[in-house]
Length: 244
Ligand code: 5HY
Picture 1 (cartoon, protein in one colour):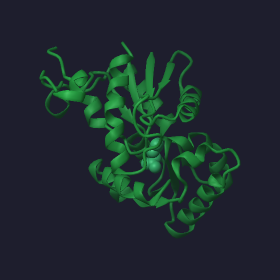
Picture 2 (picture 1 turned 30 degrees about the vertical axis):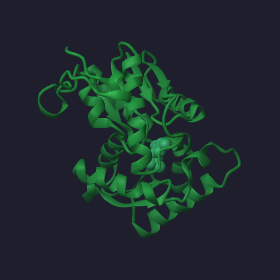
Picture 3 (picture 1 turned 90 degrees about the vertical axis):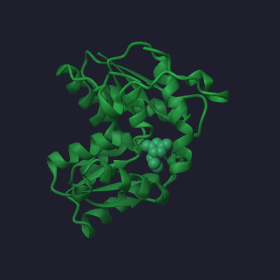
Picture 4 (picture 1 turned 90 degrees about the horizontal axis):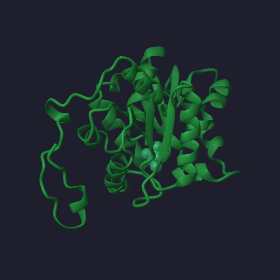
């Protein structure tokens, strides 16, 4: 199978890291294609950045040709619902994937994300997915997304310290890493803290493979029905939904 993994920000080094984590988790027969848009924010930190990354995400889906599943590799599950309207193939957000996996192996988990402005976005998603009662707390490590790309930055230390606080203060039984750019840190942090530390990129790839193996696809009845054909005016004309 072929999975398109979309990093909705424009930072290619982060896309490479996400692609490596996805391929490492994928079955041998699965081809991972990791992409990011050219247009949009270099990192997504909060609602404002998020909304400007969605057209690029949808454009990458249109450009990719036939794939068996899509993974949205931004922990806010950026544009997830819109993406599900645009295809019948499964679309998995790394946030939703990690939350579900965490509830399968722990009673309570905490999320450790980047900046404080990302916390409400994640909290709202937990409520939307009906999983807020299983999450002890969403914590910010005060690490900017692009600091994760800087070798030698204090990012790993700050994330590890926040995990320590989640375990001692929240009594978290598992930790969900709240950024795609943290994908390569999960195993070492899990060994260091002695609790499962979950990376959403790997979870989303395995869930996409599972849905494909079950031949389950996105329902086109109701909310995720294909967009109605109409002409979008001006700058967004190229995104106009066509008659199917
Ligand atoms: C992410 N931003 O996974 C989110 C994390 C965050 O550019 N990739 C980003 O801080 O919301």
